[in-house]
Image (tube, rainbow, N blue to C red; front, side):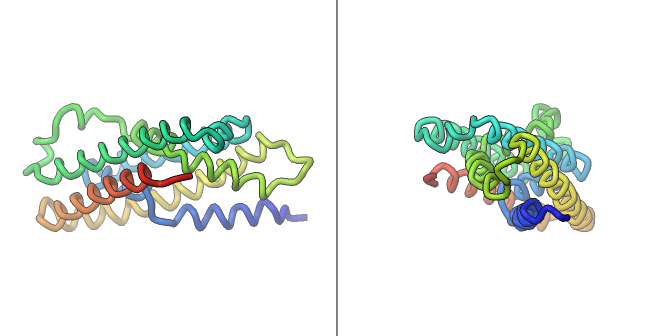
Length: 205
């Protein structure tokens, strides 16, 4: 007999996966700057963050973020600052003439770490997992196993969706080459990341 609660949870996660947000903005930034392979690493980092949130939710750690205004604010501001930092990087990079002008520190930056940090430092994801997962669990379920199953499914969806998104962007980027249109795409992506950081900083729980 199919697990209707689990299937319903997967449907909600699928909708969340395709919703525009910080993950898609970050993948766009990295795809335009460094290509599809780097974007895939960022995607894997983002999805690793989901496993962290699911484990924290199952162990009750996310309750701290949900109930403590101070803890929530600290994580929120850290996440907002990181998104804004990535956005500024994208804006600055859009003014370079070619890839050789990219600072060596940025060429060495690990896309996987960028993806993981952007996800783990987003308290909204932690609170979402804390409030979302229990609605699709039965009293006798193993909470940790169920949470990780949801996170694993969410990660697979994210990898498929973001990889397809990065592929399309990489094809568009290849067609545009080092043109003004591509640079404006990078600037728009940077602006979106900064705006998402500002929204996160101003949001309440």
